[in-house]
Image (cartoon, rainbow, N blue to C red; front, side, top):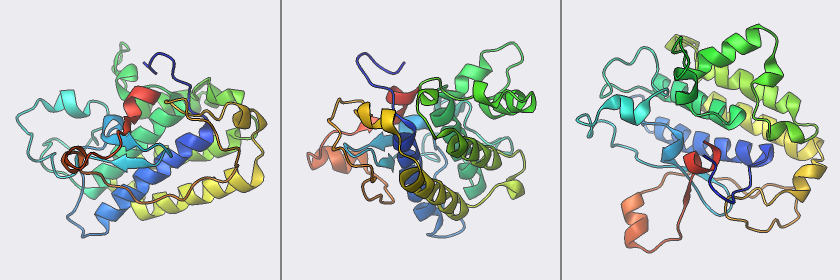
Length: 244
């Protein structure tokens, strides 16, 4: 559910969220080859008022193995991961690919698992694209905007690259960030999203748009929920509630 009274996010905002989350994961991966998150999913991406995506729950994946893994990461887990406590950077990339597919399709990973074949979201998208029905993949809310379909198609390709079956076929998060940054430059410099400017309440909280076409500065963002609560920091929103 998008939530009562919430305005669907436009593509510029969704790509901003994707970039913020990707930068957070890339930062983690830059700390060493054995450093990974292990539980990337939309409910672990928190949003600031400026719609920067912040990755939370880092370090908890190996501590909560007693919780049924299907309840925590259904649809996000890379096919090679049979033990949820044995995480890897390439598995994070797969999970990010599923997250990006959520932003593009407006569907949670579990949506595809509800069909008779039990196909996951990446395989469902792949089957639709194979039949040359690519437009059918995208969230209908996104198709209302002009001049963004090419960027969405390229983002869809990136998501599918991330969600490749074999780990060695997936890009690194550094490459993912580079590709999203390149796409966002196209969006902000080459596309005049007139309708998006009108509805750029692009906000789940009905924050008024500033009227500027330029996106705010983006940061790699990791968040410590306990520290946020103790320090009385402003409330952040959860991506899964807005997009899912």
